[in-house]
Each structure stands twice: as C-alpha cells, then as structure tokens.
Image (cartoon, rainbow, N blue to C red):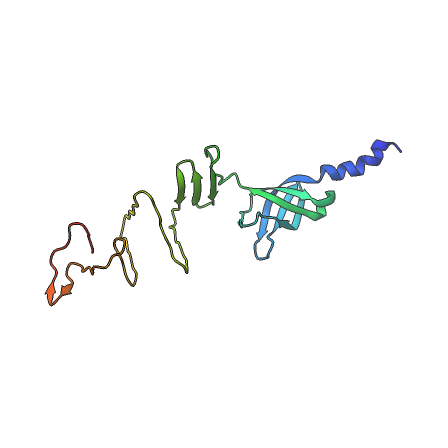
Length: 186
C-alpha cells in the first residue's frame, strides 16, 4: 500500500474540517444556541452548537450563512464559529467604523463623526440607577410630537432652588396669565 493511499482517509478528514453552511433552523432556548445547518447538498446536521463572542448574543434568521468547523474532521461533531447574513449587512462603512444592526433597519453605529443610534421602532433607555447626559457642548432634544419630562421634582439650572409655576396655575389665589421669556413651561 502506498503512502498516499494510506494518508487518503486523513486527508479527507482534513478537507472536511472547515466548511460553509446555511442555517435551516435555530434553537435559542438553551444556554448555548443550537442550529440545524445544511453543509452540502443533502447533508443536514442538527443540534450544532453555535459559539458566540462573549457579551454578544444574537438570533440569526434561517438562510444566514455560517462557517462550520468539524472537530477532529468528524462531520458528526460540527460547531459553528461565525454567522453572517448578507441580506441585512450594513455596507459602506468607513475604515475603522463598527456597527451593530438587525433585519429591521435598527443600528448602533460607532462612526467617524460620533455614535448614531437609529431605529424606526423607537428607543428606550431603562435603568434602576441614575441616567446622566454630560456634554461639553450643547444638548438638543427635538420631538415631532409631545416631549414629556416627568419626575417628582424638575430642576432647571445647576443648584435650582426657585419655585416655578405654569401659566394658568393659581398662586396666592391669583391665576397666572403670563410667563417668563427665558423659561417656557406648558
């Protein structure tokens, strides 16, 4: 038996170690996501573990593409190391930019001109602690509809201690009919 012929089974396992796959189904209910992948024509693998980077968790859609690694060259022990979905990938980023995005046109862009958070669905910030905006420049809040500031106490200006009243509030039994030209209160 020739050396080449003896090495053929090993060479076949090496060739099968890394492959492209298409996601057919996703199970996101476990501590490590598992996938059903199609590796080649008529070759489907179920229960393939999907290793995601620490701190990033995502649920890809069927039809996304993956890089599968067959541990030890055994197709029965495949794992997925990376998933990409060209249908939704942001294109045209500048060199060095980073983006987080989904299939609904939502994105967080760490761009050359600053950070942009964009969503056609809305953005909510939730915290049980304090929320602070600290800007060395101007702060602008624009709303196409109502802008609501709701709190047990609303302070305007550092060390604010003067009471404020709204137009139509009653102070000392007199209804306020005018207001400040500097502060506008609804």
